[in-house]
Image 1 (cartoon, rainbow over the protein chains, first blue to last red):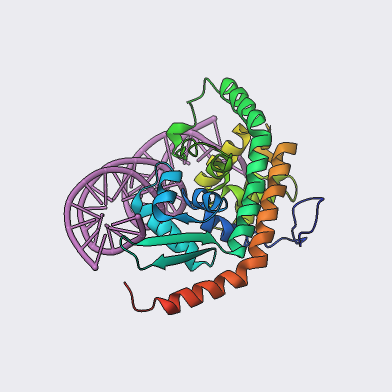
Image 2 (cartoon, protein in one colour; image 1 turned 90 degrees about the vertical axis):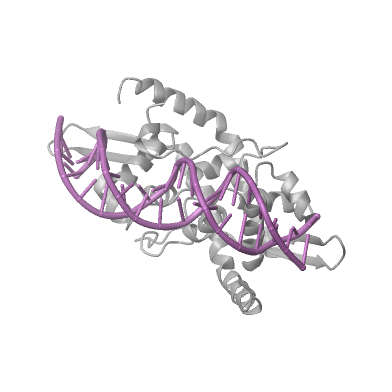
Length: 133
Length: 133
DNA sequence: CTGAATCCTTATAGATACTG
DNA sequence: CAGTATCTATAAGGATTCAG
């Protein structure tokens, strides 16, 4: 399980620069525009393609296809296709995908907790730098 | 706003449909290429501009400037400039920044725990789809 | 040393039309 | 319904130069 509640888990001289501590790996996967939204929606239960499309407003068919495929490829989502007419495809999180969704939800917690403080900070910053180019 | 014209403007994705859980908010902030790396480096202690540049290999001066400025603006990092010659500028995490770094470290934990499983999954997927376009 | 100002390349994603 | 296939727009990031 997790370690270190006292600070960021890092090695003393910290190779978080050269080949980092795994942070870039996750972000390369969920850092895009749609992945987490699909992930979070699937965390609510099994969804069909069209259901996902409606549940994630603004996503294009193309991006949903690419996003789900990447998630499947990474073993985070399982795809089940039924040879019916019209076709029917179900997506569901794998256990690994669910654990990622869980970890991501923690970040969302952080966001909600600090949203106001950050907006205040931005307000102050913008006010203090209102003159500069 | 005065930051916009310099280049970095992570486009807001808008509310995540019915319930914006805050996930997009965080990712719009740390989902870029450099922010978390700088964040994690600063979690190790106070750093000067050049120290950061060396500690985060591959980052350009421009991106380091933009990244630190954004972090400062959001109240995650505090900047202290000394009017020496040559100039000397120190960056350090605020408590809020430290708490974000902590949350991000949890995600890194997840990554390390599942890195192998994901690579296996990708290997299987690629093998199973070796023929298709 | 710590930036700011420009120009330029390339990922990423949006729009649209087509298909089994 | 669940995708493919193109084409295009945009902005994120890189390289370089200049400045306090």
